[in-house]
Length: 81
Ligand code: SF4
Image (cartoon, rainbow, N blue to C red; front, top):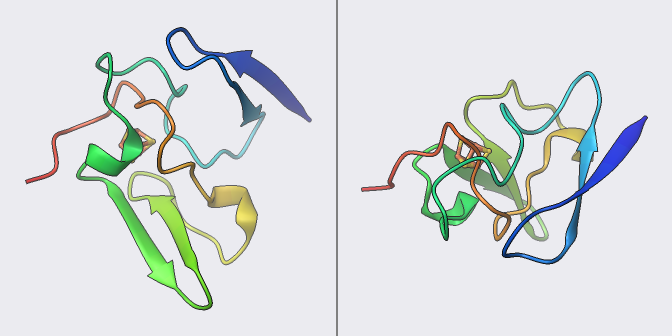
């Protein structure tokens, strides 16, 4: 089951899966204006396209652990160097 959350400042609904999630914390709970792309924990593997993951979550080969790279940061966000 999934729930939808509309995050302040972004105006779009983000699907949050209950139980196992691609995110270690709720997107939008991080620093204002920051996104997963600017976080040191984001990474991707590439096949025909890039599949972005969060390094703080055990990745699977499925889409269930894909993150939205332009989505708002969660509270575990850390600046990418
Ligand atoms: S902000 Fe960072 S820690 Fe949080 S979900 Fe995105 S990549 Fe992972």
